[in-house]
Image (cartoon, rainbow, N blue to C red; front, side):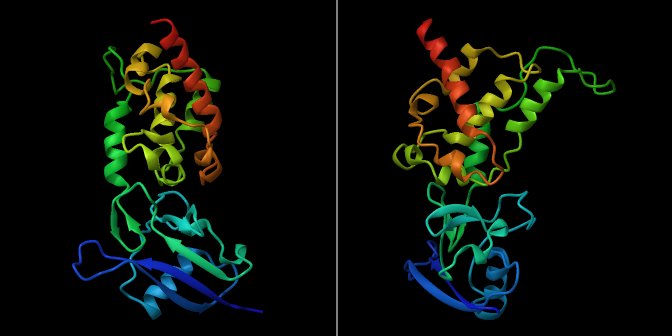
Length: 242
Protein backbone atom coordinates (compact mmCIF):
# COMPACT_ATOMS: atom_id res chain seq x y z
CA UNK A 1 0.00 0.00 0.00
CA UNK A 2 1.41 3.36 -1.00
CA UNK A 3 1.57 6.33 1.35
CA UNK A 4 1.72 10.06 0.99
CA UNK A 5 5.10 11.55 1.82
CA UNK A 6 6.06 15.16 2.44
CA UNK A 7 9.18 16.71 0.93
CA UNK A 8 10.23 20.00 2.52
CA UNK A 9 12.80 21.70 0.29
CA UNK A 10 14.67 24.92 0.97
CA UNK A 11 14.10 27.46 -1.79
CA UNK A 12 16.30 30.49 -2.27
CA UNK A 13 17.85 32.25 -5.23
CA UNK A 14 20.86 34.31 -4.06
CA UNK A 15 20.94 36.12 -7.38
CA UNK A 16 17.43 37.49 -6.90
CA UNK A 17 16.91 40.74 -5.00
CA UNK A 18 13.46 39.64 -3.81
CA UNK A 19 14.07 35.98 -3.02
CA UNK A 20 14.14 34.99 0.67
CA UNK A 21 15.12 31.61 2.11
CA UNK A 22 12.04 29.55 2.90
CA UNK A 23 10.87 25.95 2.95
CA UNK A 24 8.26 24.75 0.50
CA UNK A 25 6.31 21.57 1.14
CA UNK A 26 5.30 19.05 -1.50
CA UNK A 27 3.02 16.05 -0.99
CA UNK A 28 3.26 13.11 -3.36
CA UNK A 29 2.39 9.45 -3.49
CA UNK A 30 5.29 7.17 -2.72
CA UNK A 31 5.97 4.42 -5.25
CA UNK A 32 7.98 1.20 -4.73
CA UNK A 33 11.75 1.73 -4.64
CA UNK A 34 11.32 5.50 -4.89
CA UNK A 35 14.55 7.43 -4.44
CA UNK A 36 14.79 11.10 -3.57
CA UNK A 37 15.97 11.71 -7.11
CA UNK A 38 12.75 10.19 -8.46
CA UNK A 39 10.69 12.19 -5.96
CA UNK A 40 12.42 15.43 -6.93
CA UNK A 41 11.90 14.66 -10.60
CA UNK A 42 8.17 14.21 -10.02
CA UNK A 43 8.03 17.45 -8.07
CA UNK A 44 9.77 19.39 -10.80
CA UNK A 45 7.64 17.85 -13.55
CA UNK A 46 4.24 18.14 -11.87
CA UNK A 47 4.38 20.52 -8.91
CA UNK A 48 7.20 23.05 -9.15
CA UNK A 49 9.21 23.44 -12.38
CA UNK A 50 11.23 26.18 -10.67
CA UNK A 51 12.83 23.82 -8.12
CA UNK A 52 16.59 23.57 -8.71
CA UNK A 53 18.73 20.52 -7.94
CA UNK A 54 21.59 18.77 -9.73
CA UNK A 55 21.88 15.35 -11.31
CA UNK A 56 23.77 13.62 -14.11
CA UNK A 57 24.19 9.85 -13.83
CA UNK A 58 21.38 8.80 -11.45
CA UNK A 59 23.60 5.85 -10.44
CA UNK A 60 25.76 7.10 -7.56
CA UNK A 61 28.75 7.72 -9.82
CA UNK A 62 28.84 11.43 -10.65
CA UNK A 63 28.14 12.82 -7.15
CA UNK A 64 26.08 15.71 -8.54
CA UNK A 65 22.90 15.10 -6.54
CA UNK A 66 24.44 15.42 -3.06
CA UNK A 67 22.35 17.43 -0.61
CA UNK A 68 21.44 17.58 3.07
CA UNK A 69 18.71 15.05 3.83
CA UNK A 70 17.23 15.50 7.29
CA UNK A 71 20.51 17.16 8.29
CA UNK A 72 22.83 14.53 6.81
CA UNK A 73 24.69 14.77 3.47
CA UNK A 74 23.51 12.08 1.06
CA UNK A 75 23.18 11.33 -2.64
CA UNK A 76 19.56 11.79 -3.71
CA UNK A 77 19.85 8.99 -6.27
CA UNK A 78 20.91 6.45 -3.61
CA UNK A 79 18.51 7.50 -0.85
CA UNK A 80 15.20 5.64 -0.65
CA UNK A 81 12.19 7.59 0.60
CA UNK A 82 11.06 4.40 2.36
CA UNK A 83 14.05 4.80 4.71
CA UNK A 84 12.16 7.60 6.47
CA UNK A 85 9.33 5.96 8.39
CA UNK A 86 7.68 9.23 9.38
CA UNK A 87 7.29 10.16 5.74
CA UNK A 88 8.65 13.69 6.17
CA UNK A 89 11.94 14.51 4.46
CA UNK A 90 13.66 17.88 4.77
CA UNK A 91 16.10 18.85 2.03
CA UNK A 92 18.70 21.61 2.17
CA UNK A 93 21.77 22.53 0.10
CA UNK A 94 25.14 21.38 1.40
CA UNK A 95 27.08 23.91 3.50
CA UNK A 96 30.67 24.98 2.75
CA UNK A 97 29.92 25.39 -0.97
CA UNK A 98 28.59 28.49 -2.80
CA UNK A 99 24.82 28.28 -3.26
CA UNK A 100 23.59 28.44 -6.85
CA UNK A 101 19.87 28.09 -6.17
CA UNK A 102 17.59 26.02 -3.93
CA UNK A 103 19.36 22.63 -3.50
CA UNK A 104 22.08 23.27 -6.08
CA UNK A 105 25.60 24.24 -4.95
CA UNK A 106 28.89 24.83 -6.76
CA UNK A 107 31.20 21.96 -5.78
CA UNK A 108 33.26 22.10 -8.98
CA UNK A 109 35.06 25.32 -8.11
CA UNK A 110 36.14 23.95 -4.72
CA UNK A 111 37.36 20.63 -6.10
CA UNK A 112 39.27 22.37 -8.90
CA UNK A 113 41.00 24.55 -6.30
CA UNK A 114 41.74 21.51 -4.13
CA UNK A 115 43.26 19.65 -7.08
CA UNK A 116 45.71 22.48 -7.69
CA UNK A 117 46.43 22.92 -3.99
CA UNK A 118 47.32 19.26 -3.42
CA UNK A 119 48.99 19.06 -6.85
CA UNK A 120 47.06 15.86 -7.44
CA UNK A 121 48.92 14.48 -10.38
CA UNK A 122 51.89 12.12 -10.51
CA UNK A 123 55.17 14.00 -10.14
CA UNK A 124 58.14 12.28 -11.75
CA UNK A 125 61.21 13.11 -13.79
CA UNK A 126 61.02 10.14 -16.15
CA UNK A 127 60.26 10.67 -19.81
CA UNK A 128 57.02 8.82 -20.53
CA UNK A 129 56.63 6.99 -23.81
CA UNK A 130 52.88 6.70 -24.33
CA UNK A 131 53.40 4.09 -27.05
CA UNK A 132 54.73 1.64 -24.44
CA UNK A 133 52.83 -0.24 -21.72
CA UNK A 134 52.60 1.51 -18.37
CA UNK A 135 55.16 0.68 -15.73
CA UNK A 136 54.01 -2.27 -13.64
CA UNK A 137 53.37 -1.90 -9.93
CA UNK A 138 52.67 -4.38 -7.15
CA UNK A 139 49.02 -5.57 -7.19
CA UNK A 140 48.58 -4.70 -3.49
CA UNK A 141 49.77 -1.16 -4.17
CA UNK A 142 47.47 -0.88 -7.16
CA UNK A 143 44.53 -2.01 -5.05
CA UNK A 144 45.39 0.44 -2.27
CA UNK A 145 45.61 3.33 -4.75
CA UNK A 146 42.35 2.28 -6.40
CA UNK A 147 40.59 2.14 -3.04
CA UNK A 148 41.43 5.79 -2.30
CA UNK A 149 40.87 6.84 -5.90
CA UNK A 150 37.17 5.91 -5.88
CA UNK A 151 36.19 9.41 -4.71
CA UNK A 152 33.38 10.81 -6.90
CA UNK A 153 33.85 14.39 -5.61
CA UNK A 154 30.29 14.63 -4.34
CA UNK A 155 31.25 16.89 -1.43
CA UNK A 156 29.46 14.87 1.26
CA UNK A 157 32.63 14.61 3.35
CA UNK A 158 33.14 18.36 3.16
CA UNK A 159 29.54 19.09 4.14
CA UNK A 160 29.85 16.75 7.13
CA UNK A 161 33.12 18.26 8.38
CA UNK A 162 32.97 20.36 11.54
CA UNK A 163 36.45 21.76 10.95
CA UNK A 164 35.52 22.94 7.46
CA UNK A 165 32.55 24.88 8.87
CA UNK A 166 34.87 26.72 11.26
CA UNK A 167 38.01 26.99 9.12
CA UNK A 168 37.31 28.21 5.58
CA UNK A 169 40.70 27.18 4.16
CA UNK A 170 40.67 23.66 5.61
CA UNK A 171 41.44 21.19 2.82
CA UNK A 172 38.93 18.63 4.08
CA UNK A 173 38.86 14.85 3.85
CA UNK A 174 38.62 14.89 0.06
CA UNK A 175 41.86 16.85 -0.23
CA UNK A 176 43.69 14.87 2.45
CA UNK A 177 42.57 11.58 0.94
CA UNK A 178 43.77 12.82 -2.47
CA UNK A 179 47.19 13.59 -0.97
CA UNK A 180 47.37 10.11 0.56
CA UNK A 181 46.39 8.54 -2.75
CA UNK A 182 49.48 10.02 -4.45
CA UNK A 183 51.70 9.51 -1.42
CA UNK A 184 51.29 5.72 -1.67
CA UNK A 185 51.56 5.65 -5.49
CA UNK A 186 55.05 4.61 -6.60
CA UNK A 187 54.52 6.49 -9.87
CA UNK A 188 54.77 9.69 -7.81
CA UNK A 189 58.35 10.50 -6.79
CA UNK A 190 57.45 13.05 -4.12
CA UNK A 191 58.56 12.38 -0.55
CA UNK A 192 56.72 12.73 2.76
CA UNK A 193 58.55 16.04 3.17
CA UNK A 194 57.08 17.28 -0.10
CA UNK A 195 53.56 16.46 1.03
CA UNK A 196 54.25 18.05 4.42
CA UNK A 197 54.66 21.35 2.60
CA UNK A 198 51.22 20.89 1.07
CA UNK A 199 49.11 19.53 3.94
CA UNK A 200 51.29 19.63 7.07
CA UNK A 201 49.56 22.53 8.83
CA UNK A 202 46.29 23.50 10.55
CA UNK A 203 44.57 23.97 7.20
CA UNK A 204 45.71 20.46 6.33
CA UNK A 205 45.99 17.24 8.30
CA UNK A 206 46.65 18.88 11.68
CA UNK A 207 43.38 20.80 11.48
CA UNK A 208 41.38 17.57 11.39
CA UNK A 209 39.55 17.04 14.69
CA UNK A 210 38.99 13.32 13.95
CA UNK A 211 35.21 13.61 14.29
CA UNK A 212 35.00 11.14 11.38
CA UNK A 213 31.84 12.72 9.95
CA UNK A 214 33.54 12.33 6.56
CA UNK A 215 34.00 8.59 7.01
CA UNK A 216 30.42 8.09 8.19
CA UNK A 217 28.82 9.95 5.28
CA UNK A 218 30.96 8.89 2.30
CA UNK A 219 28.50 7.27 -0.16
CA UNK A 220 31.30 5.19 -1.70
CA UNK A 221 32.46 3.94 1.73
CA UNK A 222 36.05 4.98 1.11
CA UNK A 223 38.11 4.18 4.26
CA UNK A 224 38.69 7.84 5.09
CA UNK A 225 39.34 7.20 8.78
CA UNK A 226 42.24 4.89 7.95
CA UNK A 227 43.50 7.12 5.13
CA UNK A 228 43.60 10.26 7.28
CA UNK A 229 45.17 8.41 10.22
CA UNK A 230 47.99 7.09 8.05
CA UNK A 231 48.58 10.53 6.56
CA UNK A 232 48.66 12.14 10.00
CA UNK A 233 51.20 9.60 11.28
CA UNK A 234 53.51 10.18 8.33
CA UNK A 235 53.24 13.97 8.58
CA UNK A 236 53.89 13.86 12.35
CA UNK A 237 57.14 11.99 11.72
CA UNK A 238 58.24 14.67 9.27
CA UNK A 239 57.34 17.44 11.72
CA UNK A 240 59.28 15.83 14.55
CA UNK A 241 62.37 15.48 12.38
CA UNK A 242 62.50 19.22 11.69
